[in-house]
Structure formats: structure tokens, C-alpha cells
Length: 130
Image (cartoon, rainbow, N blue to C red; front, side):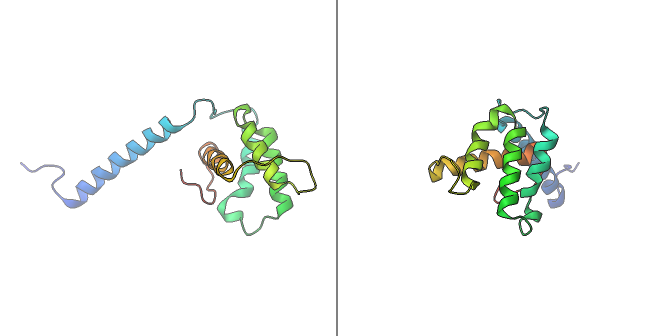
């Protein structure tokens, strides 16, 4: 009797299926507990986040980026508000009051928010891998 996994294509298929299951489990395990998958303003948050999708990068102005991030900050889950403030502060003109964080902290914030947006809203953002 031959094994079901005796051909190279069936072994690749099985390996792919196992990888898919492990990736799904890993994504679930890595989702921060304090970040919700549903919240009252999710539709508005995701609509504004779509401004930053890969396909929109050539069409967005600095003013549009700032307006979208400000709207996202207002409609974001409470657990993400501090991170959203960091992103808003990075985009406001120097003439407006704002705070600065280190480059490392800014990188951490952009990755956290970016991964959250991709998972919660189903968007594809530049330089974010989920």
C-alpha cells in the first residue's frame, strides 16, 4: 500500500496546509489582547485607514494623510489612542504643537498600528507584513 504523501506534489500540498494552519494560529496568538476586533467606530476607522493602502500611495497629499490620521485617531479603539497620537504628532506641521518620540519608538508604533490596521480592516499597507 502506498502512502497518501508519496508524491512530491502531495507532500508540498500537505506542507502548505500545515503552514497555513500554523500561520493562522500564530496570528491569533500574536493579536494583542487589549486590541479589539470589533468596536463602535470600526467602519470609520477602516475607511480612513484605506487612504494609506499600497494602491493609494501615489495619490495622497500630506494634508490628506494628516486628515486621515486625525480621523483614525478619533475613531480608533481606546487601547490604540496613544499610538495614534504619536502618528498624528509626526504628521502635523512644525508650526503646530506636537511631541516627538525616538526613531525606535516611532518604528514600534507604526508597526503596531500598521499590523492592527491590516488585520482589523483587511488592508494592505506599505512596509507592513502580517
